[in-house]
Image 1 (tube, helix red, strand yellow):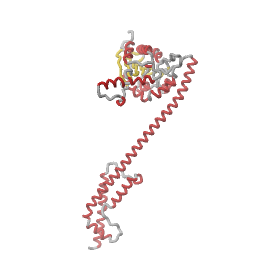
Image 2 (cartoon, rainbow, N blue to C red):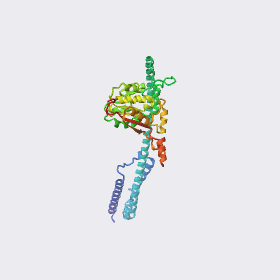
Image 3 (tube, rainbow, N blue to C red):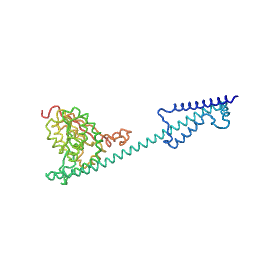
Image 4 (cartoon, rainbow, N blue to C red):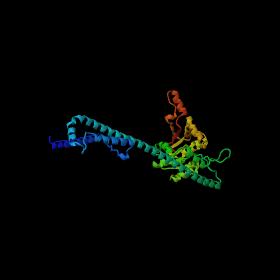
Length: 403
């Protein structure tokens, strides 16, 4: 056999080997998941680099080959060609092994990315918690300084005028304790609300449910005892005309700093100064428990007088029918007495309101209640772990009082 023929055959076999290897690589690449990118060795983990090197070595041995320059290379290539039926199955096995190695490498890359994503997610959460913690610390420091300044100004002004410094009671009793001691300082009550009332965002989320009741109100809304102004902010977002009155000078100043229309003063006196039938709604959220029964009834009568026909009264307070809610009542040092739902409903009806109804609010989550496996469990849940708040919703009659 001529030497040129052998050389041509070996050269042809080398080309076929290269074509087969290229074909296997294309098949493996086509079988990879969409969007999968090769893992760069310099950015891979040690495990991935080991698999990557194994894959490269497997590619080198995909088909038998004879390096150039070895002794009797031409004869050896001819022998490889003649015995190709022997290594054909081995080439298929090598191709499948290469594919498995590539899949393993991709799996390692995905697992590494999953772990990196988890680490980044935890770092983001920790950074967010740190940011909120720092924000609350800054807010506390700002409030401490602001409260001290405003309290000093309020105390100086009231001492100069001979008036009593109002206590923490929202809506304003402010006449001191029975023993003659001065009432709770406004700054102390403001700090109490910052710690125990909940964040403004949480309070706004709870109060948002009242907005549908106020749509189409026949006049502006008055928020009596508006506190930090969360509900006034919701009314402003909803495009409803609203104002507020707050006895605590620090809270009133904070509301005005937010651009809210709030006056400092006694809620009952302010309501009594409103013209008859001039308001579309009167709202008192977590206020009546700060008053005596006489003050509550006077407030309801003044609200009835100031509301336009069809106007709405919303009075929210702690639900005394749920024993777990009593903790919140006694936690607040400015609370005077609890107001049972039926008592507030009766006083509203006696003040001349119509369509008086009770809405139960703030239910406890399931994990804070008893598991109900019997009718007695249901009764116990209602008694011990019922809704924490309720609201009386009442309408002013269509005809003005005395008509």
